[in-house]
Amino acid sequence: MFKKILIANRGEIALRVLRAARELGVKCVVAYSEADETSLPVLLADEAICIGPAASSGSYLNVRNLLSAALVTGAEAVHPGYGFLAENAEFAEKCEEHNLVFIGPRPETIARIGDKANARRLAQEAGVPITPGSDPLAGLEAAAAFAERIGYPVILKAAAGGGGRGMRVVQSPADLERSFVHAQEEARSSFGDPAMYMEKYLEEPRHVEIQVFGDGEGNVLHFFDRDCSIQRRYQKMLEEAPSVLDDGLRAAIAESAVQLASHIRYRGAGTCEYLVDREGRYYFSEMNTRIQVEHPVTEMVTRFDLVQAQLKLAAGHGIDVRQEDVRVEGHAIEVRVNAEDPDKGFRPSAGTVSDVHWPGGPGIRVDSHVYAGYRIPPHYDSLIAKIIAWAPTRAEAIARMERALRETVIEGVATTIPFHLRVLDNAFYRRGVVTTSFIARRMTS
Image (cartoon, rainbow, N blue to C red):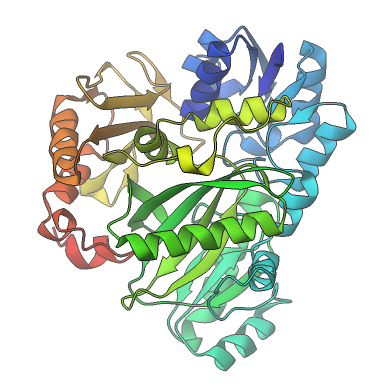
């Protein structure tokens, strides 16, 4: 096992990785920007090193500074978390060039499957169904021609990233130019790459994803499914495992994900995302070559620590579980608590958290880097906590989550907790009738 790793990220995922590593006896260096000097991961780290200014372009996206931080502190490996450089093949390659283990897929795998348009070609090779879509688009004219060919509505996506950034639904030719320009700019800002591709847009699908884990030699396990359909502007708000699907469809989608991951000899934790239409047809959308924000719901129902598994595999210990040993027990729901005001259009609410009380009790897990007195910086994603509830059944998990959210106290900033309580109380949600348009169609107040 490694003696020391660098955590090249911030917030709750930096703390999650730190905790997993500590339990394995691994020391952690936390890289931080000037805005994150007083964050909990920095305060709890064995070592912390400043990598630049608040702007992510000068810190969390600064490859040179991150590599220097790892080398000067004597780290043997780098965990990229999610977002920032987690799916950046160049960063992974530079780590290897400097004799640092990148805790994730091989650089060439990230480049092949992380490019969303190329991922579609690989899925076709593996016999995995995909929606009609394009190669990377040369520009606005190419986008217009392809949209005309497959028919509106279409969806623009950033070729180099995920997480909902650089995505726009386009309903008609009149909307295309504005949407294309805005999506490109968002992709450039988030991933340093403005390349776009296009897919046919499916009306009201479920967003279902499969957690996979591979050894890099073609052996791949799946850890079943998650439903991530509750989204606002392509940002997931609430996730659960397992999805409300019949067992046959669930098994087919999981097998599809394993086929694809085996085909590319995937190494480490990854997620294959699918859209499922009203008739139960499923289509591969993209693969995320990293740990996901919503990984805790999978951990709760399978009792498998995905982050520790990442560390063990990267250190050369392989996978110590067989597919037949992976079982789903009960139901788990995760809500993303964002520092946003849902009553004011989800306006960001940066500021100082004057008081905080997290929920507890049976089946409750809280992943958060926030403490009383912590100042939430305005420079990054507004996620401040993930509250996860596990129970034997979905109905009990909903009740447990409601109880946990009502126990939670966060003062000084507005949060999305009131919104989550409305979702949980929604009759359609309680019946499991969820699609990616749920918030627009079912949350009328």
